Length: 416
Image (cartoon, rainbow, N blue to C red; front, side):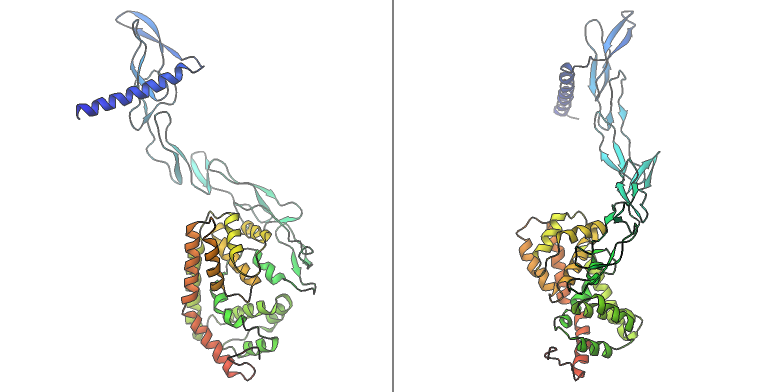
């Protein structure tokens, strides 16, 4: 090692020692002492201890104070002491732990349990999930477990969760509906149409988080929905679809709870579900499933705030998703599902809107707002998937063949 390097290291150690000495010189707490027997002088001396971040280099004498030196790299001393060595930093964190604070001259490396776990004795244990009927009162931390509380009157929790609080029951009256079934501690209230129009329970269902995200089918079926089929035309289309027929009871239930545009989407989905095992549907089903997986990966990320989600919903054309509905989605879904669930909800309110075109308009507006760049990239990817999917052509050809083969449905104008 060169002379210049030795001088540099010596100067650094002196600088650290001076800073520590200066700090404690003006500290109100008296410097701790220790007794040292000097065999040369054959007497005891009362010496100053070394401050945190240092170790004893030389004991005090009648002519000089205690000499301390900074702890070497990867070593620390946390308290005043008179040991001639610093402690060695802990090498690694244990299983299911992460580094919260790296080791420095005055503190050892600090580890904590990873997200979703807390420390019990010496092991990281998974946070307790609150049972249905119970909500999270205090979320779990790396040091403590989840604290659950029973849902009070007017609130419910329908599933196991380590993060979700009890959710307030839907007020059917405020929405202009009748209460079909009152809410319980484990289920939301169920609303039904009171004959005054507006949204129905078919729509309200999408405020609860569900796993069968079907945005690809929504986009694929859009050209049928946009034609505004009458009830008669819809019946003829359903009757002429290949494969197994949709159960009449399900059709009647949808007619009572869904608007005409919603009926088309739901009936087509039921038809797909009824024919998943048919060889003629295999390529279409596989294509839709692949499309859904890709879309889910594009939109499934965390750390989106209420302001981010509100900005996305406000940027879309047509009927706006209400602020309370956005909050409801946030309270019932995992963060990685927010975008897909809200897009699904927007689609339910805007059956005549094309989702790819709507998102294209959204991108132009969002560029002027403070939203994460990765969110813009995700939306662009979803648009590209919807615009280039070959599954569209398979479905469109099938539907156009049915429409053109029917005397009551014309290919050029389904409204005639």
